Length: 141
Image (cartoon, rainbow, N blue to C red):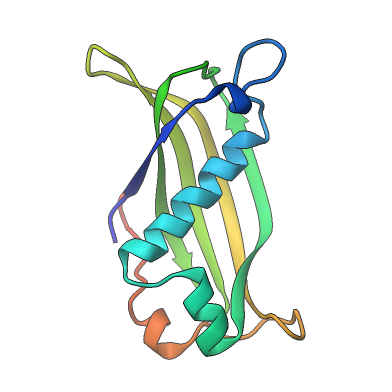
């Protein structure tokens, strides 16, 4: 799969006392992007839980903050699946600002590793075959 993008608008509630987006909110933007990526493939978290009793949990995350976002900025969160294991997925993720002149600036880059777990036991389980077959890592950087 190639890169996936999800639009985000910055509201007052996203900013800190300095008027910039609070650093932890970028992790929320990453999460929203992954959720919408899954939804774009025809799946959602609620159905996976009901049908398979599985959830995807964050195993590790890293983020590199390059530039701040501010109130009313138009952003786009992006992801690329870089590794697909039997019970794990790894993503490169980023958030770009979409400038009014048509240019983009990368504000944050990150790497997120997820584990597929059974909700009752919270133990790793294989990604169901029907879903695993739909997920393809991207070779593009």
